[in-house]
Amino acid sequence: MKITLKPLHIFLLLLCAIALILLFTKFLTKEAATPKGIDSEATPDEEEYQAQRYAMAERARQQFDLKNTDVLRAVQTIPRHLFVPENLRDLAYSDAALPIGFGQTISAPYMAAWMTEELELQPGERVLEIGTGSGYQAAVLAELGYVEVYSVEIIPELAERAATILDELGYQGLHLRQSDGYFGWEEFAPFDAIIVTAAPDHLPAPLVQQLAEGGRMLIPIGPTGSYQTMWKFRKDGGQIKAYNLGGVVFVPLVSAGEPQPLKIPTPD
Ligand code: SAH
Image 1 (cartoon, rainbow, N blue to C red):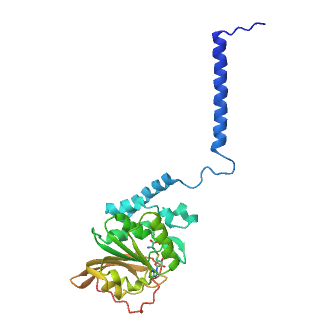
Image 2: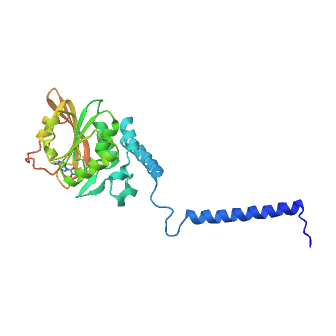
Image 3: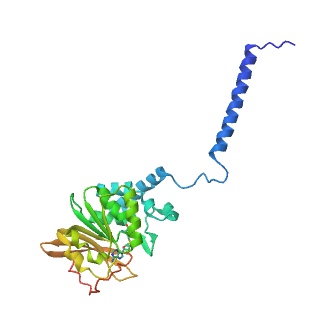
């Protein structure tokens, strides 16, 4: 029997072939896209983290009336999820302090942003942080790009871990060391700004001594296990002026520093 293919038949055959190819491709790509046992909604990728970071910075701006665009840009840029334990990464961009081991916490992001803004940092200034912890606050300071950052941490493991992550992220100009920050960092004093991220129950005298003329210090002071007051001190003409910025909660500053009565100059 002779089969003659008319143009219509050829067209129909081609159509069938295309339909079959499309069907197979769809089937194959579907198989490849969702291998068994893998949750397609796993860890958010970098783009999602970025979106969460922007939302977090926006909340910080609105709720704390933050105005310093350099600080907000820093918070938008720094991958905070890399400063928290792996099992807490999904919470990295929430407005919360998170545990980082050794009974310590990484401060809430808005707290780091707010304290940084309150330091009123100017280009070329030298800033000392007491309590490196995760290294996040040090990264916020370094990310500004125009200040020299010094940071001390008393727990050796945390100091080492922070140094590693900061180095990996390219913040190489930081000066870090493991020591008791109650005594500041005499060698590089005076500092134009000092930020203390653990709470003593009195104002450490060495930190006041190491504050430069015109310098600002942000420090939570109060009893352990309770609320503290965030104080902003300013050294003006050799005098210390104090400003009460309100109630906060920080982990205690543990120190060999001599316990002294709480002496705070009268607020303006
Ligand atoms: N700034 C940190 C928050 C750290 S929590 C961050 O961004 O993650 C407070 C830190 O202060 C803890 O790591 C704690 O170990 C440290 N610390 C407590 N007492 C200290 C002291 N006397 N000297 C230096 N660091 C101290």
